[in-house]
Image 1 (cartoon, rainbow, N blue to C red):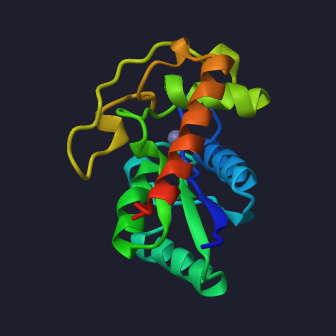
Image 2: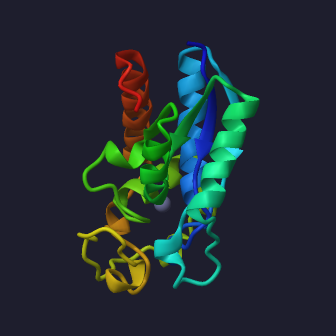
Length: 192
Ligand SMILES: [Zn+2]
């Protein structure tokens, strides 16, 4: 199957140091690298997702589950060979339910963080100018442990993880792992 890769992200608060577009930028970077490696095409990006758990943080945008589903199915109608590379955990369940070809990158690390070591490192590697270095500090948080969670109940600042451990070199490694695991998943045929 010759897939056309579409990135799927979100527009949501990522603490004091990362931009709202973080998930979308990470999904774009992975989609482009995967497409290049297996000589496939990149389609486009869906850069607002289902972010209801982050809506207590101003500036965050969300689609309803129905709106998000419509975007995905419309993309698939227009490009039947679409493959979705998703970097936002809030979109995982919807993509699973739709049973469309996709990977959920946030499942490749346990736990995958939110503006913590993983996301901050990748951003320092792919787009360092968008990282506010002076905003990098430790945060009080706990990992969400039940469905339907809200970020503000687990982290006042909106950060899950420790961004002070982030650096560019780790970012390159984390990104490579996401790319390799995506390609493995496609090759195994275990894309759903
Ligand atoms: Zn994120």
